[in-house]
Length: 273
Ligand SMILES: C[S@@+](CC[C@H](N)C(=O)[O-])C[C@H]1O[C@@H](n2cnc3c(N)ncnc32)[C@H](O)[C@@H]1O
Image (cartoon, rainbow, N blue to C red; front, side, top):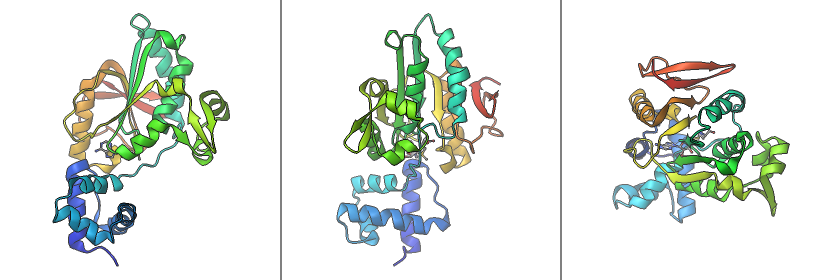
């Protein structure tokens, strides 16, 4: 049975108001598929009953699970490769030199999903720092979804997951075998702090960052929400810091106070016109 227009509109409005994620009218099949899986997991008979439990009975925890179910968590190690090459070859050497006196370097991964992106950054950072233990280096990795953050924190990946983008030498160096899976070693886990953080709620409790990765999340939002998030990000980015967006995301035309820096096949953005 397919979802009614009324139910779809209810889900679309809840998802938009809680996460800013836009669901086009043609996403009925996606809503149906994701919410069927959620209903099954929660022992609820069907999607209609799930929706009415949220709408008519005001079940807030189920509402949050419904929003979470509509997030897209696709990610992989060193996704798109070039931003990470630029980090290794240009950005980290530059900032490590500039921060030599304070020995402090902070990176924010603002849509961390299941952890492949923050761990890719942790690997680069650890392998770039001259004496990692003498540095106060941290990666704050945030996401709206507690479920993906739980997986990220456990740091356990299947052979298929590590096979997507993680070079063999890094696998051997930074992971250990745990049963049939690969587990991130403790020293790498210790570099990453996972926190739930909704980009469209008030921003609190974040430090100033040298680098912000905000990749493959803005595509789900409308222009006003993107502008708000990127304006907020400016307040948390060091004056000589760098912002990385996803391959199909741009700041162009938004009229914000950033300038683009070309780093070979990719660009990053720095504060100031
Ligand atoms: C497609 S993944 C991108 C993961 C990673 N940055 C990458 O590029 O591989 C998008 C992530 O954004 C998160 N997300 C969606 N809406 C969000 C919001 N309002 N606040 C914080 N995270 C959000 C989702 O839960 C999902 O894990």
